[in-house]
Length: 280
Ligand SMILES: [Zn+2]
Picture: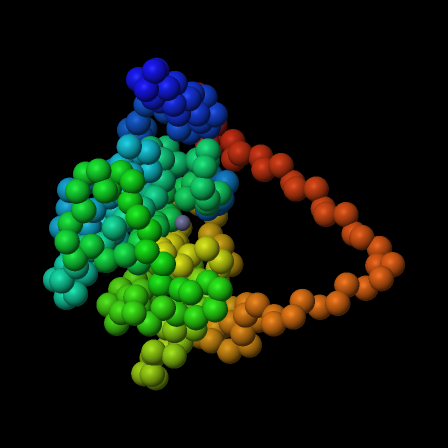
């Protein structure tokens, strides 16, 4: 009986792949020259490189989902940052999602990561390497007390500051997304006059157990669409304060006419991406 129900559960799990996007069904990367096409949340990746599953200073999480492909710039960025973390900070970075073998849409999780230029790096530092099983089902560790909207002092380390600063100072990096509380912590901790890097670190909900690095379009990728640069300044003042949840919600006006939400525009996949899912 036990065995029966287990096999039922397994077959149910595997049937979930029926909902996979076409991008999750491709056989592997194309052999074309590397090129990121389209925008971060609507695009694809030609000639991707895999992040090697074994490297210095990093480990790849959930390798079974095969989200470890990127533009070659992305792969060298991860390898460099990891070497530095290993050498200078004596730790190992846990690397989450990059992109699929030809980029495109995931069936679960985020909508970006489509052009091989986005990388999730966990804030859990693996001073002891994780086993294969732990890597497949990793336990996230948050550095933010979400209820109190405060950094968890016992979890936050100078090494987090060092890693995020070093990533932001890399000239290939366009943006880094972190939870607003983490951005607040970085703003507080950086007392040098050199605060330019903070401009690239953008507050965004979610990112409290990992940070998300976004690289600029490589110049050789003619059909890659960059995002507008972040607003000028270090972003530590009013803009950051505006993220803080209000203590009491504003009163609801009586007889206020409800504005219906705007229908979401359907994204049209860039035409240059289509051959990547139709040709094997
Ligand atoms: Zn991400």
